[in-house]
Length: 277
Length: 342
Image (cartoon, one colour):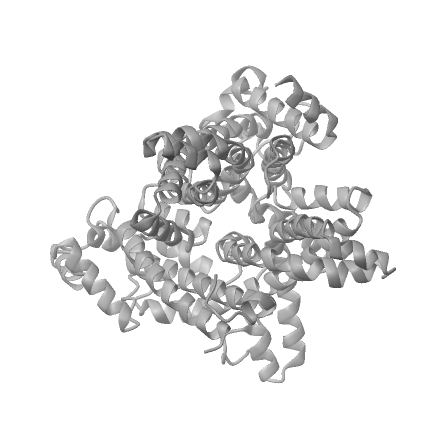
């Protein structure tokens, strides 16, 4: 742990990523106390102050109904990070189990499971999520569901490729010889060797999940107003370019910042854990 | 039979199996819709007879496996049903909107390869020094924002503040171009209308760059990673010992073997652009598949949704086959192999 932190600190880019992520998570968790206008996360209207450029009162300006954009971005981070956490709590375990089964068992289990994974991977990621949101109601829960459904196959493929090469290793053969159960070999022997790769992918994926989720809401297929969401804020403001540039630029940069943070951190983690690209 | 041909047949076979799976997946997504699809499609004002007619037309009263059978039969005939939004066959709609999207995606893919690969080569050649660090930060930055954010930023800078490029659309309204291929850059050239030809390109540049940015970052990172590995090989050391120029070593000896593992991922990135095109098209009011896709989704137009997703999946499978063939062609181990591999 201390060693990991030292390596992280020695790599300035990873350190920047780490600090960015910590700051943003902190700001999101404590948004009700940090936000200058904590009530502006809902359907508040203040027409006297609508569509104002950035100023000392509103650091990032106000939106079309007078809500403080900075405050709304902090609340939108809550939504984005929460969605990312839920997706990454479900998709990696599901994908890992499928990948382990296919990779270790081989035979018809491998054929069926991996063809299933191929089917999911042969629809471009965003398109599958868009199609699912197309038939479901646009709510936060459904957005989580759609993103999870498109995400697990990537973990299945990652774990499968590792498990398949580990299957031939000496320690697996040794465990087989002393009569260990398949369950034991898959989860106690092979799984620990997949963990560094899974962990790195999860850190990098946090950013990509946020990108996909904001893309859904950008198209109007995700979280619905008045709940603040970075993607829908950009979409709403894009109609008022170039004059009211703050409506789009700040939420857009907010997405860039959080994803960049997770990418820098994941990149550093890859070096610490020694995972190949 | 040549190894490349054998590979092609094998890949076609696998793709066919995957395509059957995709059709099942799309069918399943279409059937998880809550409520009666016919009622949703027609809206609250439809009469009971209208709903009944649509239910019969869409075979909604049959058991699910029979419904899937009908879906597959129509699919085999190239019939994707009628769009309830435009009242035209879905295939006609898609044929109208797909070329605009493909035009955008093709150019973006070209930019991705033309800019991403050289950046990766540069970073690998100067690995550990400032060009390497610069490329690393740049590529991390480009993959860190969704393409709609890049689209908005590029539009603000290069269309509003510095009016170099048009803000929206595919071509100025004053040009009337006869539709032949649906690709504006080709149709204008066929018509011999050169002002319109340049105007079409002028409209295409900014959306294509916005779409390509995250792919450029991916391609550069990947090329660098694979090349750095190749640089460790003994034959590179030998080339250096012979006193070959570093630029020649980079381009000829380190790059060529490194491009092969990168190609698969570049193919995937290209496919991701088909999805991201939805976002870029929305920003630049590009009249492609996205506008149609979003419109039919908001109207819960099932036939059109299924058709659009299916066409995108098929395009993706075709791209993958092309990439695999390209790899087989570039890789002498497959090209000259006597037994089927891969």
